[in-house]
Length: 421
Image (tube, rainbow, N blue to C red; front, side):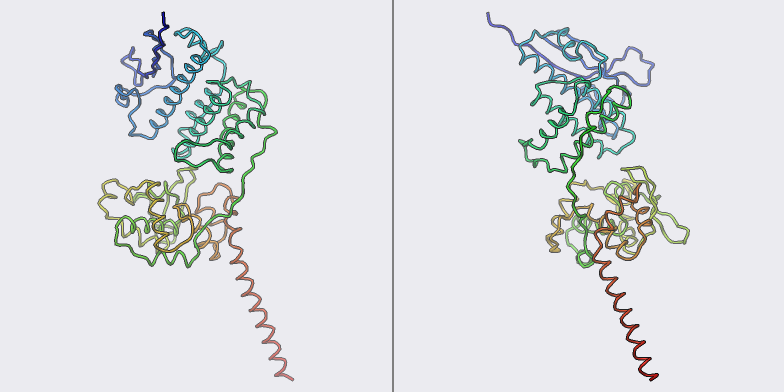
C-alpha cells in the first residue's frame, strides 16, 4: 500500500480569549495531517489592525510592515524545518515537528531567534529603509543554512569563525536566479557588518560566550564619493522640461543640491519645518529619519524658489507635505532620463544631490567643515571629512591664486624699489 503524503500548512491567527485586552497575541497555527499545534510568536496587535482573512497585519503603518516581515520570516523557518524533515525521511507529526523546530531545549538561543529578536528590537529606533536591509541579511543567512549546511536553524553556540567566513564566501559566490545583480564586494561587506551587529546583541545579552567575529576584518573597497560639478549642476538648473514628471524630479533634485536632504527627509517635509531663524530669514528644521539627528539649514535662494513653486500644489496640500509624494525607485528612474537629456555622464541618483551640496555648494565655497557636518546631520565629523577629500582640485586652484597674489606683491615691491633708485 502506497504511503500517503504529509499535508502541511501555516496560518497566523489572534487568540481572543480575553476580550477586554487592548491587544491580542498572535499565534502560528501549524496543521500537519489534519492535526493542529499553535506556537506563540510573542507579538501582539489590536483587533482593528489585523486582517483575519490574510492572517497578517494591515499594511497602512510602517510598524506593521516590520511585523509582517517578522511573521513571514517565521513562516519560512517553519517551512524549512518541514522540508528538512521530509528530505531526511523522518516521521512527521505535530510532536516530532515541534521537537525538530525547537530542538531538545525550547529555550536554547538560535540564529533565527537572534535575528528576529534583533529586527523586532530595532523597529522603533531605525527607519524602515535601513530595517529592510536587516531583513535581507536575515534571508541570506537562512539561504546559507538551507543550501550550504542543510539546516533550518542553528544554535548560537555552534556559530564560530569558520561559520562567519563560510557565510562570506556564500555571499560572494551567490548567483541570483532573478533579475538582480550578484552582490558586489561592498554589498557582501554590508551584510557581514549587519550580521556582526546581530552577534554583538547576543554577546551583550550573554547568549554567546565567544565572539566568532574576533579575528574577522571587514574589507570595504573605498570609492570616491560622486558629485556634480558647478557646470553640471548649472546645466540641469537651466533645463526646463515639458513633461511635468521630469520637471518635478529635476526641481526636487536641485532642492536637495541646495539643502543636502536625503530622499526620506525631503519627502516628509511639511510647512511646519520652515521657520524664521535667528537672522530673520527662513530656515529649514527637521530630524534625519536615518539617525534621528536634528538638522537646521539656512535656506539658499534656489531652495526657496522651489518651495514657493510647490507650496500650493494640490497633491502636497492633500497629503499635508511640502512636496508631492514619489517613490525613491521611480525618482531615480526618472533621474536616469534627466542625465541623458542633460548629457551628464554620471550615475545620477537622488543621493548624488546630497553629495553635491556637501562638495560643490558648501565646502568648495569655503563653508567650514563643522557647519557642513551639522547641516548634513552627521553624528561624527569623520563622516563629513570623506567629502572634504574630493575637493583637492579646489584647494589646488586656491593655492594657485595665492601664488599669483604673492608673485604680484613681489613684483610690486621690485617696481617700487626700482623707482626709488
